[in-house]
Length: 264
Image (cartoon, rainbow, N blue to C red; front, side, top):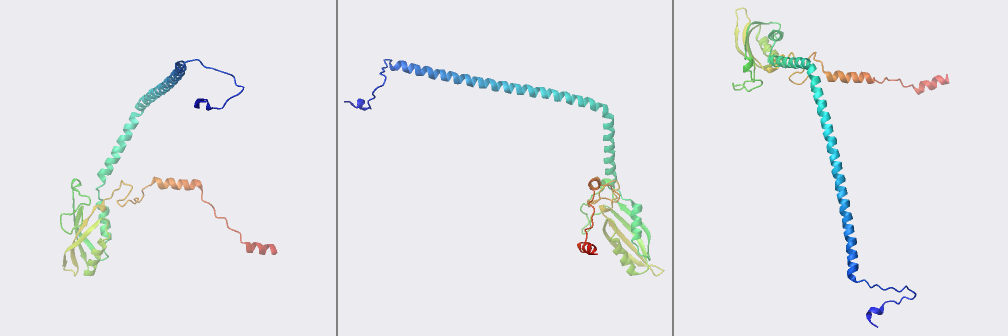
């Protein structure tokens, strides 16, 4: 018996024999493979067509939305022309407000400043004369370095003459000047005795940019609100607190006193 016949012997089976050549079986297998490939190609083409149709649908929807938004924008522009006068008035008001801020920013109210200077004088000191040397608005150097060594930045110089009764009062005048608004530095150039037993002192007071009144500004140079300025944020917070209401403090009963009253 050969090696090919060494398999198990089956009894009672249906006898079969295949006379087809192997080439016929191979052609059948090839036809099945071609049908599978054709079906796969059809599925891929269908998926591509579906994707193209979906993307075209999205593109059409986007184009329609774009046209609708463009039409709405055009309507808003046409409606805006009805309020062009109000817009121009608001722009003119804003420009005037900004121009007022720019024009008044380097302003010093000299009358009020001289009143403050007079208040710094002690009881037995009197201002006899004064002169102001202030820079032009176009020449101002806000906080710039001075051209004179050891001199603080300044925007104006006040030279005035003070008569004092005694020398200690003259020293007190120089000390009081340090509390002036916009004080940069001060120096007494000459001190002379007069015929009445007093002293005539010539003082040079340099003023820096802190003396600017900034009367149309809401904030000071240091970032603090000016006196009388209305801060909207604080008002809104106060209104919210008032609307929410503040909790009332309910007194807590004393257990000792309650028990005593019950016993009585």
